[in-house]
Each structure stands twice: as structure tokens, then as C-alpha cells.
Image 1 (cartoon, rainbow over the protein chains, first blue to last red):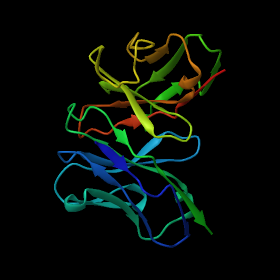
Image 2 (image 1 turned 180 degrees about the vertical axis):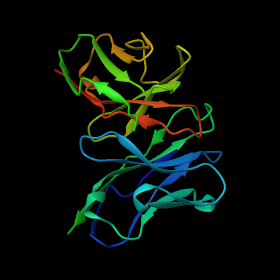
Image 3 (image 1 turned 30 degrees about the horizontal axis):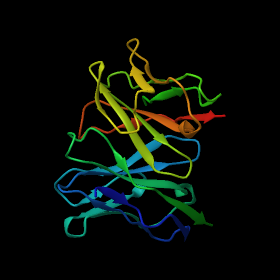
Image 4 (image 1 turned 180 degrees about the horizontal axis):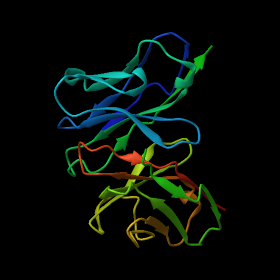
Length: 115
Length: 114
């Protein structure tokens, strides 16, 4: 079945530590891939996206993500987390079926940052 | 920076009542979307809209739901007869084009059905 999986519901890191949030997808053809962030009371903000080409993509706020076709993964990373990064992070895909016309979201990972 | 706006931020209604959720997409965008997030669950796609017609809809988007672009700026979602299970956060989004164009999301409307 087609799906987007974020295996970690909740992650806590210390400020300054590195971060990796996992995302796996299950689709026949490689979909377009996205990471969004949602701060409390805010809408969803795009961090980065991957369509093709270089498998390491850079985004806003110092985030990057790496597409690994063999693992059907698109993990989000940040080398040094700031307290303001505390938020909920959503991986999303735009499947080829339907002409990339919609986003399918994972369940989200809530990030807490300890001072 | 242009942004998607939504009104109201919170709507409380009685079961069986009609509600209209309003969105103002970014002005030069051509594609419009509604998503919803039931508390504690995933963000789910409801419908996409282009050129004054629905281009895709999910199984959730049944006959109780409708969308409209009544003028050049607003994009609305109507729920004709609300049910308890319609309680959720509803997000509007817009994009300039498809596929590689980013969908920009509004802050959401929290709908509570009593």
C-alpha cells in the first residue's frame, strides 16, 4: 500500500546536538518529496523539497535532507539544533499518480529541545 | 512576504449546521487545496481546485463538502451538515503551479462540532 512513514513520534535533543528525523515512503515511482515544519498556532512551512538531481538537498533554517532511493528514505538532518527548532516536522510526498496534485503526509515527529 | 490567510481561526458549531471556512490564497497562485488534521492524526488531503473546478478529491470529500471560488480572492470550503467527526483543523493551501511548485499553507481554522 502507498504510505509515508515517520517512525519517531517524539524526539528530544539537547540544544547544539545534531538531529536526524526519519522518513520512509512506499510508492511505485519515486514521488516528489518534502519536509514541512509546524510551530504551535502556525501553518505548515516548507523546509525543503526534492524532485530530482543531487540527492542531498539544502533547505531553510540550516536543514538538509538526503534522498536514498535504495532505502526509499528522505531523512531530515541538522548539524546543530537551536531551541527555536522545537516544533512538529512532517514528511510529505506528492505521488506521480494524480499528476503530483496533492501532498500525502506522514504522521509527524514532534521535536523537543532541551537547553 | 505573501501569505495564505484563513478565517475564522476557530469555529464552533452544532451538529447538523452548515459551516463555511474561508481562505485567501496568495494572489498570483492558480491552484488551491484544502487539507484537514483531526487532533492527533495525520494531515489529510481533501481536495484540489484549478480553473474553477475540482481537479482531484479524496474519499473524505463526500457530498457534504463543496468548494468554491466566489470571487477573485476567496476560496471557500463548505460543510453542509456537520458531524462530530468533522471536528478538525482545516488548512488551506495554494501554489503557483503543480508538482515542483511549493504549496503554501495558511494557519488553519479549528472547527469544533458539538
